[in-house]
Length: 204
Image (tube, one colour):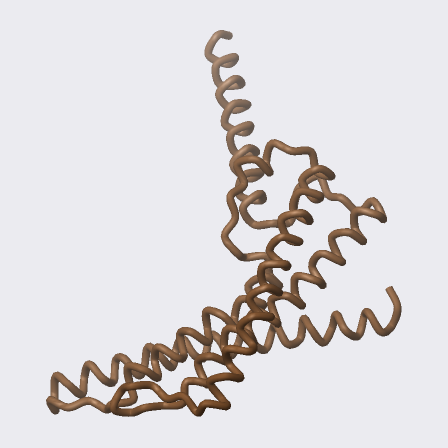
């Protein structure tokens, strides 16, 4: 890998890590805002007009912009019923194909959501609530998040293909679902071995 590609990979993964921390901060902030609103209504009988929309905006940010961080750690939800039956190299290529499809979808959403955000900026669109915040703020989260997710998928696919070409294929995948299955298989084999040894001792 050239210095330029390595540097770009570091920048993209660094941005993904930052978005992860920001997403966590948004979730905590949304929880605190909602809790404060509930307490204020119960005790004082009043609530601020900005609380509901602010908490919704924060959760939207966490969902879309935090997606790149989740992909960086390979923690998106997966169905592994087929993957666990495949050989390691076939499994890795299958993951690459699925990742390319996901990358294309993220790029498609980013491409078509940026104009929507710009339209909200140009038209100065606002929410119809009493607070009336500008809509370009929440509209920004989808194109920004999908753009970062697209870039993170590019890095992930590049790493996978590079590993396949170099022969760095592990018999046991690093993904947490497969590790759990491998652990369960080992425990099952240990129990069977213990049962057979116990049965042999009783026969003697």
